[in-house]
Length: 279
Image 1 (cartoon, rainbow, N blue to C red):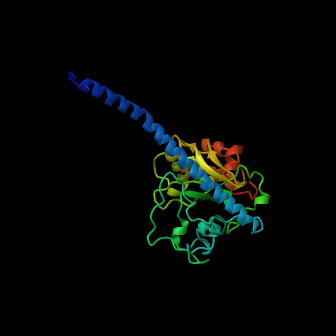
Image 2: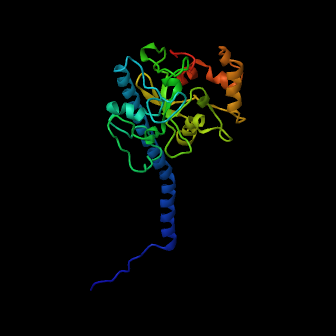
Image 3: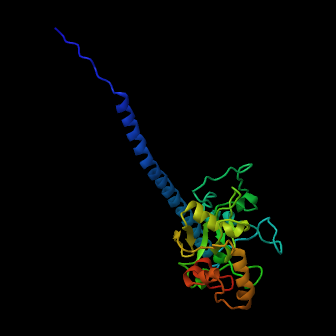
């Protein structure tokens, strides 16, 4: 005679305990997954940076050791009318990609009408777009106007001189270049214009204070400690004071907390000096 045995199911308490355990495990693992995802994006960003600086080195090999200017040959008019944001097009024969000018932390935006590449002529203002910005200090210097490009073989600190870095502006099309001294001072709030804020925003909003950077010797890495955070949100006042009272007279000694930070050798060699063709 077969004996029927009743099957015992989960009680409500047991089911709730299992759900609670799964929820706890998920709460533990999700931040780990997010960190792993961000680390993968950062690795992709460093790869893009490296491809760009290697492209610049190859470009320089074909152009008497001179790197590309941040402004050159484009339809954008500035000053004497011969400058335009054009680096993506100039480097295309070496990088073979128009998507390398982007930090992987945010997706590449859609471009109206696509991104045509009509031969060697001007491709359109979209060629200025990118969230890996070219540094004027690392690419050009201000001794004469128009600003001449740096010559790689003339540089004293090629492994320290940053040529491009992550840059986040308010426009989803990015911030493709920035000035030299000002970006080393960052204020978290209040009226700075977009250009000097861009590297600081990228560093503190995407990369935990580090700044993904490509260097003149061809390597890429995360730069730490290169940005002074102004506690009083007075970057413009400090940079103007240093310019008006010191640097415009050829005196490059500190006179406020920001310039004391900027003029330390490691930071100075990273951002590049506008007054020297070799630093």
